[in-house]
Length: 424
Image 1 (cartoon, one colour):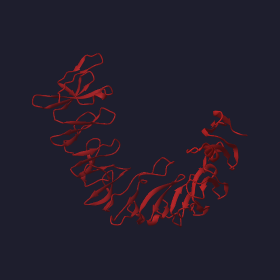
Image 2 (spheres, one colour):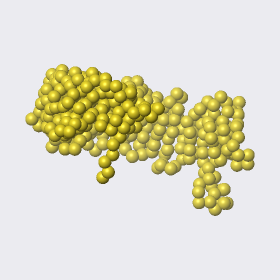
Image 3 (cartoon, rainbow, N blue to C red):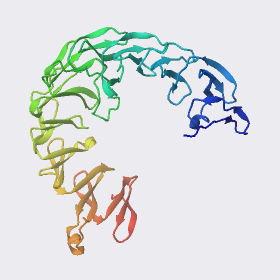
Image 4 (tube, helix red, strand yellow):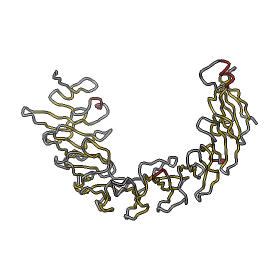
């Protein structure tokens, strides 16, 4: 390996730092940062660290303590920690680049708005921005994905963290107070409902709602609150949040796939269990009693669309319209409303969403496929209204843009891409 020496110059080429001084940041960052950490090594291999401006003027001497790696706060020149290879320990610095802890931590995870996690060996605790251990290092493991041979924690979610002592899991708050006793064999799932009301999928629960599994030999879950009060008994293979309209519920699934719906206090909403439950944007529930037995129910369990269709999906929530099939996937689609009235019998292979009162419908032109002996499918498109009536005939090979302000862009086999007007 060749030994290289570097110098730092300004944009005019004038020497700022000579080759006896080393810059500790990536050279790609030199133009972004207005301060640089530098170090100089003497004949005794001792490192002298300091902070300089881009003109090479010393701002602050960090110290003479040897350290081998510097960690910056992402996107800034703010140092968070320094690493001593000989001791194999981290120390932390504040915003003034003063040491706020000695070299004592073997790993850590910084969090800008909550307590940062620090660990010594296989024990863990939580530290604030000033280097004070708010919750002393004492826990054996913290919920999270494996990081080398240790657990990489996610930290506090809201004001709570799931931690372990003596092989049992419990819950603490941000002051280290025990909220849930250390009685559980598995980590307690905690978290927040998403603020994104368009999504019904979340990683974690609403604060103070916790998924727990008390016995690892029995793969079932229950639900408790932050007062350790049982909301759902341990009888479910999974429990998850469920958003219906703007209201939040709890969905639990038992063995053999039976799903049940509860409010946030654990009260059962529906009297029956279903093979499948999903939220419709109409505020109703698409339910199934088994394969090929889908329909629509309300929160009282009343069947609005009989549970007899192979498949049902939202089409136009504003008008209470749904797509449906009577046979397996790939068969023709029809339209049914939320009162169970069929608007359009299964007629088309493709039906788009409605826009300005019209929807694109598509079908294969099998006669043309046969005539051209074409292996690829040839499609033709037209438009229907909200009553399911074909108001623009099948005469286009593609629809580029749906109707907007009374105009749509389509592709005509004879004329190419054209603009058409919405019919009166």
